Image (tube, rainbow, N blue to C red; front, side):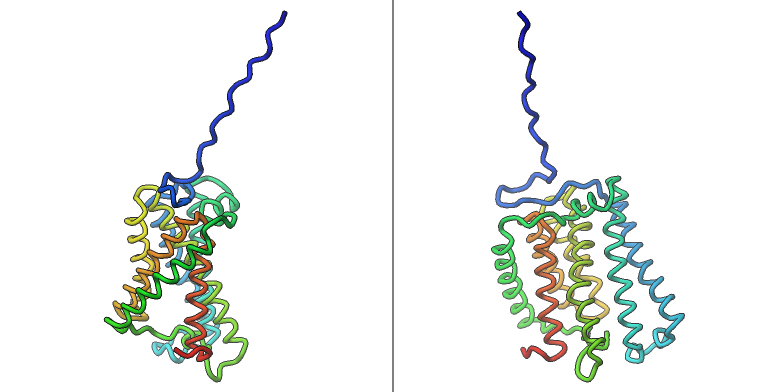
Length: 263
């Protein structure tokens, strides 16, 4: 009599996310390290420089020392290059570090399926940011350059310019900056650090680039916003949560800057 075939026990699937607290889903595992993060920062700077050179070849207004003399097209074009630089750097660094293609990079950057806790996390994050914003405004009264006006939007501006500025500020900035600062930077730091140190470092790096257009209080406020966005990403496990929060914030700011909303 022949013996029945041996059946191996099923393998326990290994998690594709970092170990985290039970109340958090966590960020995906990735091989992104300091080298890839540094290279990505250089790519973003390079994209801005290339954009400046290319646009200035066809629009000399960009070379004028007075930024108020820049044409709307030049300002919008430069912003578009920055958006593309953030996206390209995030995907490129992730693909190089992990050796996968675009779909794998998207997963490792947090662009997974919507899961639980997104709505509650967004509500909690909005409440936290509103309270922090009110406190910072009451104590420091931060001031920042009107980015919508810089891009040519606002009263008397052509509708097409205002729409283009809105797309870049609301959609372009929210998606590209979240891919870079939360998906790549925070996600990379989380491979080596616990939640709050990684969130704080990535939040400060997110806030610092806004210093040329604002004061230190603006940097403080946006750094705190970056920490909240990192927490929201970690808690839900998908970057869409941070993108939605960022887009909501930019939408309100844009509508205020073009005088549609009054605060």
